[in-house]
Length: 152
Length: 334
Ligand SMILES: Cc1cc2nc3c(=O)[nH]c(=O)nc-3n(C[C@H](O)[C@H](O)[C@H](O)COP(=O)(O)OP(=O)(O)OC[C@H]3O[C@@H](n4cnc5c(N)ncnc54)[C@H](O)[C@@H]3O)c2cc1C
Ligand code: SF4
Image (cartoon, rainbow over all chains, first blue to last red; front, top):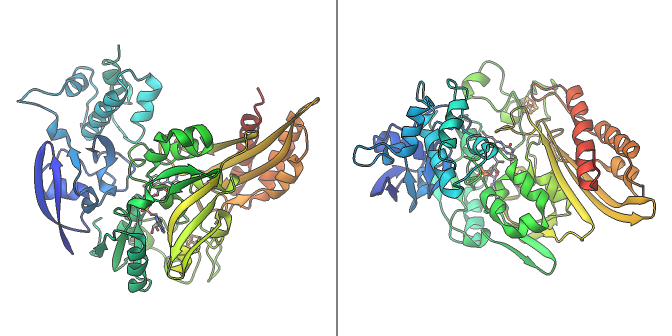
């Protein structure tokens, strides 16, 4: 069964014909070519597929695209502006919070949304915010450092 | 793993949803947030012809207080529960339990209704179809053998939702809409204790969970939820306990006027530790009593090895989390 949905993806309005069984992750990667959103476990456990849905981080592998109809989606591709990395992306670079890079899109989006809700998070609040995102390289310390660099 | 094709319906009101469910004659599934359902569909644990989505039934998304009852629509997300000042103030244990579900990436999607209607879990069932293909299909998945008990026609998969214990401890009722109309029943009666069909809806009543009604707790009531899980960040409970205490004050100190202890993660339904409650009633809360009550509660659960965690370990954990929860609910300093 097919359905037409409207999504605002990284600021651009899209009208898309999708299969109702497609997840938002599949639509982003396959129909829109936005492969910055990663497919990890595909079971909601790893957080590699995180996108911001109406500003909130969610696992896009557990969300049917049809359920996102009318909503706003931000993926990692939507962060850099005019060739300039987003400050959070720069912080991840500078603090060595990236190694293989597979978790980075999700981590960076979670971090961005945390600071929008809570500009001065404690280290505990940072840890709680990234609890759904698994990183197998950095051991998390640099990631927490990168996010902490925004806290006054 | 991709999802198989299905039809998808988005009724605008509850009556249409009930009608749609009836038209499907069993071959359907209700989708709320989908965080549990999508995993199950990817693992091919079921292959419904249609999904009936409750997304567009706006009457299921409110939280309100009226006549000393707090009503929560089934489609309120856990984020909605967490951001409700009414719940934070009047039902803090519910706030705690919602916070303890999964990870922050699930809570904006996951609903309270989906948590109450959650399927039971087992290490032989919650696996990919490839993993499961190395053995005979188990009873819950449609075969005729249980790999845990070796019996042919029963399932002991474990109830693992975090929120129902708190609601039961508060005496909550669920309102169900179905082909025969609307009914309400105490939440504990919603569960069947059958691992294969753990609640009346999965047992085929054709109903939809509409809302949850929680009586406003009396001022002397204190309720807490305590969860133990392998990874603090995301996991289902190894064991969780909700403890509700109604406290009185005598010259000799605080005593227990009423109590309710409900445990998740142990059996195919939430377990009420009734003997532990009896032990507490009318007694003064002192450390010896709490330790005794925790022992009794641990002996009242009958965990079965449906995960990698042994029943004996679960009993030990029960003693610890029940003691901690009692201390916290009773306001007893370490
Ligand atoms: C990685 C991961 C970790 C998790 N950790 C936890 C955890 O720690 N604790 C926990 O409790 N859960 C956990 N879950 C399970 C799940 O995310 C939550 O229980 C969630 O609240 C389910 O809500 P939902 O709206 O997504 O349900 P759905 O997946 O939409 O539905 C779940 C079931 O309930 C039925 N259903 C839903 N709503 C209704 C209704 N109104 N009427 C009738 N039937 C209905 C559906 O048909 C389905 O069978 C986890 C899931 C994942 C993927
Ligand atoms: S308890 Fe037995 S029947 Fe139930 S899911 Fe596990 S193996 Fe299958």
